[in-house]
Length: 70
View: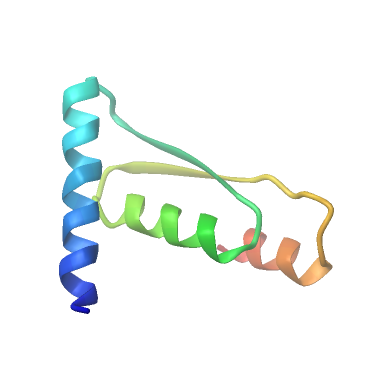
């Protein structure tokens, strides 16, 4: 699989979604897991405003720390 093509496809989709929705940026809740980290990173790669909010759940302290660092 060509991951750079997948990344480009998703990033372009996110940009098109913003344009068609007449929005200015993204708000992404992160918990310290891989899913929210990937989502927020792809949003940031669009170069549009991306607000990342730490949304801890009952989880390991390391995950909470990771979400704060992200």
